[in-house]
Length: 551
Figure (spheres, rainbow, N blue to C red):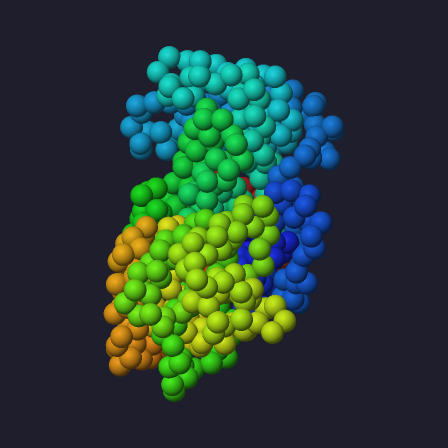
């Protein structure tokens, strides 16, 4: 089977968990051929290197979503040929983005019509990126934002806002102009299945492959793609009018992808709820949990508990992890269990925000425990220790989890909590805040409390620290759950079955013209018995019987 793997800002370039998951997928499904269609967000991502793709990854096709395309200088003639049609489609598109008060179904239909209209023109004549950066497109965007009845935020867009929005929309729509849609080409026309491993612009090649060739589309989101995009726009400092336009575009694009996808595979219920809110049909959603390597190798829980009641927190230093609330909760724990200890085991600290937050946490720990040097590293001397993970002499991952009686997660924002999965695989009982996919991961094998509630967090920790039997029972159940649901093997098995199921239930695209042996040889054997049913009827001739053409 030939799989077109559609990525944006990820595999084979990104080294994060998303890229690692794609690499495990390609390497694990050796019975399939993969072609990677990678949308690159910036030069820095590409310059950082890429994965060495396995043998069954036949080709990597790259399209930059930054800078100018090299062929833009050669397209003005083709742009002029059908400029009016393309501008009309773009004008419809931006009017939909700025529209206020239209019924959701009609809005989605107008968006899809304009989107596919642009795609058809780009496929026939090219030159779409140059057109979308032209003054004509900018005027179309300005007219849409100045029209009566638009949303107030968009109506206040200034010249700089319009220039920024036009540039970002051109980049988001750039996959429409990719050279991948030739009907007899060797790109998407030959794929049996398109698998988009994120939302956003990565779904555009899959939508066009379905429209042009009938190729089924599979959409996988392990994070909430739309939410991450909106947060990225805010973090980039974009103005409110620009964010409103882009939010409308990505919301409508997500809805179109969910409607056209043959199957949607979120990684958790949290992502699934967002997808359903954007129009995804429940009947075409199948949750596939991510798989994490090495869970089986993590140590089983030790037979004996720690000498002192010990809480362990493992993760990345970030304000969203709310270590401040954890420290206040631990102060309450110490009032009930004076010998309790807290080990904060963190990864590498990078950037001024993380460095400053770690300093704030150390300062708070010193205030809460003034008689003890809270910033020391050695375990056993202080109630709170901050330990870098992987540093010389520091505990490894398995040792970190095994050293505590209870593992704590105190986040106020979380996607899929990997640290909880690792703690569960180590047989640790957990106390977590109710954010993201925490409840789905825990599944009754740990305690869940509201976020930003140090008192509730402290009470749950004390309850488990005082009850060894309950703690061990929950830890054993957690280990079984982690090894059953969150391994690489279960993830690969799920996608192997999904691929076969989708291709089996979707008719193949019609073969291109003049394919050798496209028709059975028996069809050319002389005789009436080989003729189709319509040819067996007696013909009605208006004149003399024509001589049979010897050819």
